[in-house]
Image (tube, rainbow, N blue to C red; front, side, top):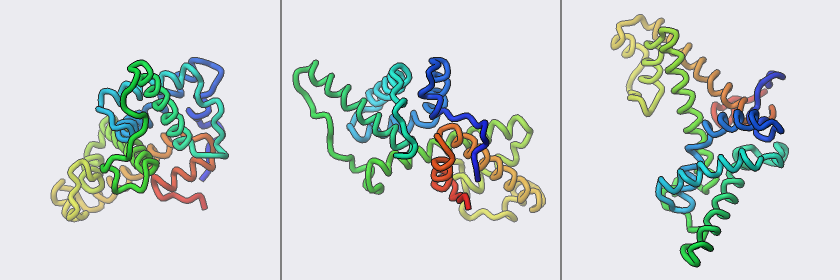
Length: 230
């Protein structure tokens, strides 16, 4: 697997000298990271949803305005790790400032919430939320693609057989689906193969936009889809 030479990287664009290019890049990055960042901020600092959303919005606005990522070096860390460290610094500073204004109050950091007991760390939690966000975006794009191309049956089969959040039946098999949708088994096979291929393509296309280089892309592709470059 390799990057097309001309592929667009929002990670690179986020530190562009051109303000318009930075804004465009951040639209792409925010689409992938807004929900993971918001959930991470709410959990780590035990904030209610409204406060977490305000801080998340403030972070992305400040990142565009102040060019936070000019110092990002992909040889030292994955972009999502660098992003999480930037979020931590931003939220800590904002909470310290709020505490100074109030002349007292809660400490900046708190213990990790019990809700992430299944994850070994907040870093794992952030990673898992990012994976969910990437897959959710890909599912939405796949559904739009199926609607545009008149392939709603392909999406319905994909959702029924593969998607946990959209009525997946763990007992279903191709013959059951063929009977349910009044299709030959071969058509069920073809529809699912097409939908899975397009889903994979969409995920990889979005991943190319939010990684800085081929090495990072391949590492994240391995995490998301189990794809190896060899």
